[in-house]
Image (cartoon, rainbow, N blue to C red; front, side, top):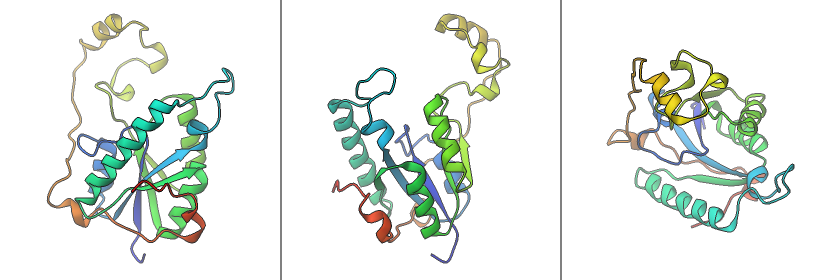
Length: 197
């Protein structure tokens, strides 16, 4: 592709409406390539300390159905969802090289393994992360996340005294089709694509 693109990396939030990170990617005005990677860590390897599968059969089925629904929805906007299976950092590195990607945009996560993965991805390509899926972002409350009350009632009482300013989020609309893009998958990644319809 001649113009720089943005890869939107779908992770835990598969919504296209009320998705702050996706909105930020679309606002940049560059072609956006929607991608999901079923990382081996989550879908193939057992939990190291506990020894059981991280994702059971029912969860994998629900994810497959959700991804198919997301793909069909994106197709109504003239795009598609590119689904890969393997090592996320390696796949995104190759895809960004192939697409002349200026950056990868994704939702920020807070768990250790997700943050480790963000670090690996950011070693190869600029990674822009945005909060989502929460009413109170950690950077908008006056206490650090590690000092957050364990019980919900105590947390609620602590944040109710603070001003609440929800993020404004753009929803996909009539102007979106020109922003979402389709690409030719490089041969090095074709083997890692999930065949799901």
